Amino acid sequence: MASEHVDVLIVGAGLSGIGAAVHLGLRCPDKTYAVLEARGAIGGTWDLFRYPGVRSDSDMYTLGYSFKPWTDPKAIADGESIRRYVRQTAREYGVQEHIRFHHRVVRAEWDSATARWTVHAHRDDTGEDTTLTCAFLFTNSGYYRYDEGYTPPLPGVERYAGTLVHPQHWPEGLDVTGKRVVVIGSGATAVTLVPAMADTAAHVTMLQRSPTYVISLPSRDAFADAARRWLPPKAAYAVTRWKNVALGVANFQLSRRAPGLVKRFLRRAAKGRLPVGYDVDRHFSPRYDPWDQRLCVVPDGDLFTALGEGRATVVTDTVYTFTEHGIRLTSGEELPADIVVTATGLNLLALGGMTLAVDGADVDLASTIAYKGMMLSGVPNFAMTIGYTNASWTLKADLVATYVCRLLRHLDETGQQIVTPDAPDTDDLVPIIDLQSGYVLRAVDQLPKQGPRAPWRLHQNYPRDVRLMRHGPLTDGVRFARAGAPATAAAATSGGPDA
Ligand SMILES: Cc1cc2nc3c(=O)[nH]c(=O)nc-3n(C[C@H](O)[C@H](O)[C@H](O)COP(=O)(O)OP(=O)(O)OC[C@H]3O[C@@H](n4cnc5c(N)ncnc54)[C@H](O)[C@@H]3O)c2cc1C
Image (cartoon, rainbow, N blue to C red; front, side, top):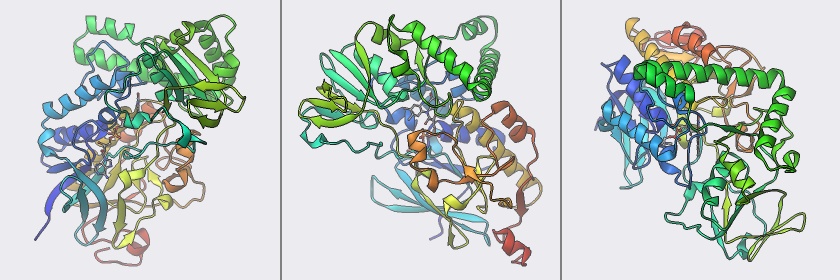
């Protein structure tokens, strides 16, 4: 039986996948599409994570879509509000009826003769395997494993008689009231959880191996509030978005060019919010430079307030062993704990775990080079969304989706069916994600690389990417062809079919 065929197959119904479908519907209304989603719900990250206080750490004027103003007064929003925004978008733009839930894509095979992908999905609900074909495959599957968060080895944990929880798998209804809680970790999740639980817990201790940069930002944006009063919603959203983009770019550039200055500024800002005599250097002055890892944002200084009021404590030390009633540290100190939360991170996963093959040969992701941070060398009619590491994810996701639409229209206008990035001739390759965070370093060897310069280098700079991707050429570094042309440049020059 022939498989069902769509023009574009989108993998993932999270923030990016829903945005991609909307862009496609608006810019290429004649294209048929389907969205395959492994889970039973829309929202991805914002549906999965349910720990207390879960929220964005970017402002929603840049984490929201370019086409749908974020109108909630909260600039830093809770997970529930973001989930609602993504679902509303799917309903409002008619994406909902294109989504097939419980379809986990496991493999996609490209065939140059027919210019089609055959995409294999497994239904976790019924156990069935299904197959679709598509002309263009667009993965929006996020960047980490959904089934398992990262937990490092925890010596002696089998002896621990309390409750051990990973934020990615938060037990519904876990009551922390009156409990002594230890949160292991110092990243965005830990700094969110600590003040949220300190409201009701007996005490919360954040146990970190080493400090992270933590910066307080207002949860409401006074500029956005004023813009909303004076301008129509779309204009107010656009000016606030650009204001925040400009601030973000300026902060990042300053951190790169004058790290010492930014370090001193962050230290002074943290010190100003902490009690007199607090050991800022021990607990809030990292050894690395700002933006070697993501900065952690705390809205209205909530973490610093909890520390100042004595409801929470930061301990910088390492776990020697778990005991029956808590954790013994390397320093010898004991931390009694009814609940231990391992906010120790994510397991990075490329392309939602799916494998790719091109004309019968498996694609080794680690030996591909990312084109404009969104396509892969030697892989035809394929795009993936990976957001910025130094700015809101959606800024890049919007650009990738609009670029895919430009490419699709270009193919139609020129009567061609295939677009393939051809790898640049260089050994000067670096990892696709340029952060030094543990979760990146653990997986970086399995990920695509990037080259020395555009279009093979990711800028991590939104205004520059707007020029490159919205207005720049479509033809640099890629080969366009008709169905039947071989996928690799080598095969093309040696005279494959219809070369
Ligand atoms: C706790 C947390 C907070 C964050 N806060 C911010 C923030 O403030 N700002 C920011 O910019 N970024 C933040 N991020 C990064 C965040 O993941 C992105 O902002 C954004 O949610 C990514 O959206 P996405 O749709 O690309 O991926 P996801 O949200 O991960 O969604 C991917 C979807 O694809 C589905 N999927 C995956 N593999 C397959 C497959 N093989 N087949 C079918 N479906 C599949 C998943 O089930 C999921 O629904 C945060 C991440 C986490 C974990």
